[in-house]
Image 1: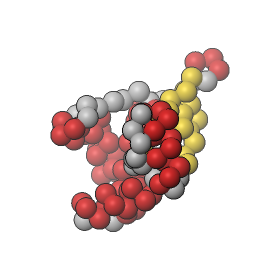
Image 2: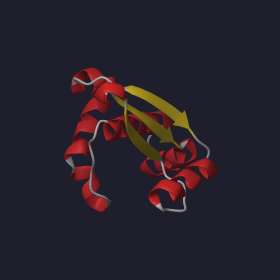
Image 3: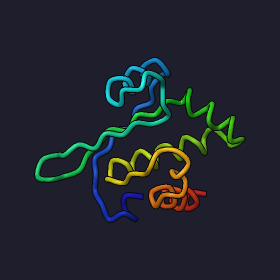
Image 4: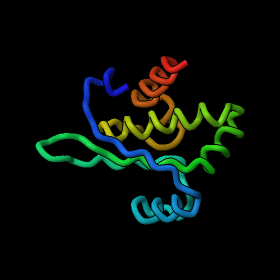
Length: 114
């Protein structure tokens, strides 16, 4: 995916339990509940790009069940979603989220993994 974006980045991927994710979400987003993914882009030395992506499998499992998709598919979506945020992409909240350019890009990458 980074190759397709023509970008280099150093990324960390961390899986958190729901209480750890709730605390992280409360601290950084002001929302006192667990969320599926949080991403933090970081400026590295000499303008290089790095970032941290945090995923909560507990929330991902609930979302996968509600959408009737395998958990592995939802986890892949969250990894791609988080990486795109680190690269600077964003989307609106709410129902318009899935119509955004970022969401379409994400889904295109996910189709290429199959």
